[in-house]
Image 1 (cartoon, rainbow, N blue to C red):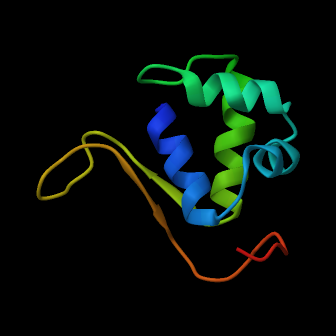
Image 2 (image 1 turned 90 degrees about the horizontal axis):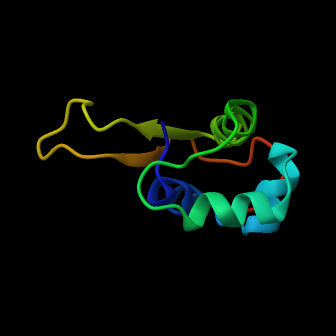
Length: 90
């Protein structure tokens, strides 16, 4: 599961816009826009969600689930590595 807030935060960490995320994930810009406009968990076709999550993971984004160990709990994102795995500058 990914929330709209996590999706927006992941893009911010990577320094990319919706168009770039659409290109690297192979989905349309309107789809990314709908995903980011969702309340809470992003809803959609599982294949589309997988494409987006996989694209983010390739660029170093790790999604932190609600029940992951942390001092204060909650969902989040983190950038696993520095650099530009997909050849883009951030």
